[in-house]
Length: 81
Image (cartoon, helix red, strand yellow):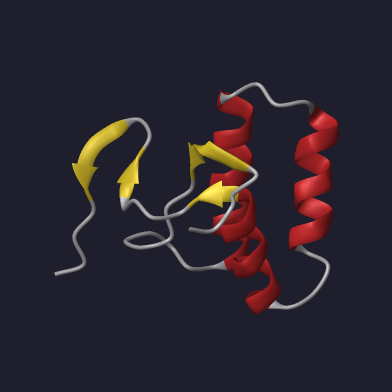
């Protein structure tokens, strides 16, 4: 099992906008909901935007739980069909 820095923060990738900026926005909103320090949020943004899209996705999966398609505020799953 992979180690995640913040396993209690859910940033789903499936069923959501795959635009890099949208992914970063979801991550930042989730971090703010958990009241993480601004320095930690800025560290994530700096790390995530350091390279290309593939690096962004790797960073998100290293920092957060990305296994769920559920939104933290909504128990309904997003359906692509």
